[in-house]
Length: 274
Image (cartoon, rainbow, N blue to C red; front, side, top):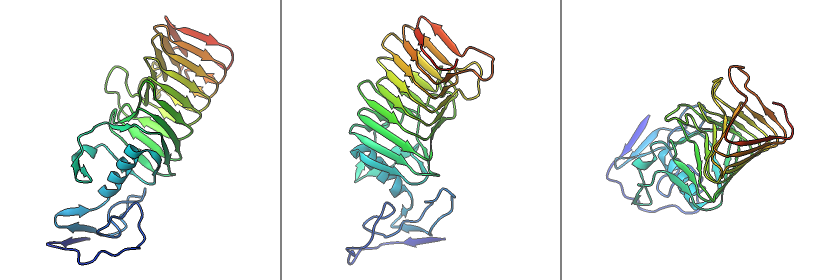
């Protein structure tokens, strides 16, 4: 159903009414798809040509990411069309969305969060705990030099290779600590360059089912990767990158290619299963 209101003015705004992430000061509950099931809660409401739908929730999420602190991803979000809109009366031209303050993201169970290629850029400290899914065509999270990224859990999937690196989930040039989660890309799923420092204590890093792909890449003399646990579907170390394996599993399940490819890198195996 659709309800359209034209030439309206607010005589008196109620105060003290319950609000949540689906409301604004003009209308109580916004229409649109709020559930992972894909069903609408209410009719679509149009006020003076402006659709009062789920877009307000997308704006709330982006604003929260920019402000930092605790950010909760409750349901399905698609940020790939974000630059089309405005926020607080100002035209939004920034793309990517930059994390410039310490931020803790919690993705709730059943939620699917879709971002654009290289859209989410961490320049500060970003902590992610997830029971849902985060996805993009390529380059889900860019972790810049000097930034810190901690991932405790969740599913992170890139769906398409758009360059020679192919299907990157995390492009890391800073500090990255992975405690758990599932990471799946179509190429170098976890890509480390520059002065990247990555520690993997758990989780499953996949190579998209491609026997000739390396799920973990270290490229360059400034890269330091430590593997203490988890499962890695093949790794590559080139250009002087240091990789230390203390535990976990590094394997190419397809048996079509190498589990470890070391070309001008420094790979040390102290333990684990290769």
